[in-house]
Length: 117
Length: 116
Image (cartoon, rainbow over all chains, first blue to last red; front, side):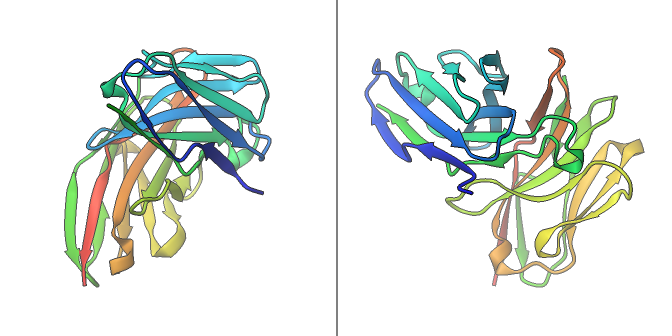
């Protein structure tokens, strides 16, 4: 199993440009998440999904959109990038309840380092 | 909404010293608790987790954590650190959000530097 993969690994955007980050998981997890990590701030949840076709806002959703058309993929879009969105983005996935101690344990992807100039 | 506090931003230890990283959370209901580690330039990996049962949980690489319900704490310990333990450590709490789904809330992280 590849686990959780993210593409691209690095990207530089100019202010106002758009892009989509792709997250894929091959563990048949129901839940998927997008976080951003900034120095001294820990991980903050942007959006998440509890199943195919469903998405919900997390702690810091402004400026981002997401879609989960297939169970294994979770896309994060930036419609008009801003310098404040310079960050490292992590995708994660987990089982829902009903999987004992494996429930809710999140598996993380390698991250995408995004710089907006 | 739940919150997680990690007491130390940066801890510096010599090799073989003992480690204890504090974590407190605020949530009144049933929680699942996790410690994740992030080595430099890498993604987060699970160190250990608490779901139920014995409040003393053992994880990988000699780490352990103790869940003390009355103190809302889940402190991470290791008796003797190594240079390879240099990393950032995140405590996380999984609890029901206002929307009814389960979300993981992370602390801001503690950076551990181990000096050879």
